[in-house]
Length: 129
Image: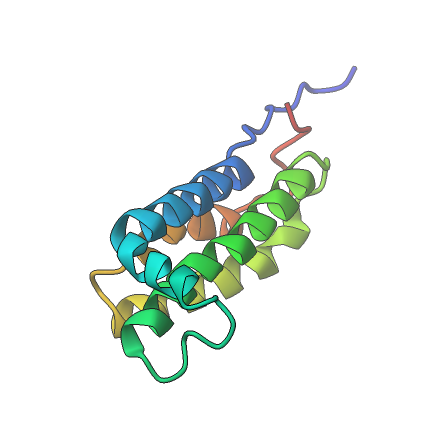
């Protein structure tokens, strides 16, 4: 007779996907006029040395990798043994801590719940839901 295992809730990847979507929406809300100005100038080579355009561009572009990370973790979460994602969690946690030290008012705080959950993945959590 086998002992039933506790089902793991799948949420980390979806959470990161939502953060990525909110980050991208926030980029357009916060930097809309900057992007319009870049479009009006023809987009190509419009960032140059302008710090506001650089910030707007990086803010917008960061949503893409975060979306990809969320999609990857979403796929990994469905595997019975999800412990391999601990490394991703540790990397995300260290990156988030460093970013929060540099920019305490940033949205990097939003990555920490997912990073902590990934680091704390237990091999005995059972099958995915």
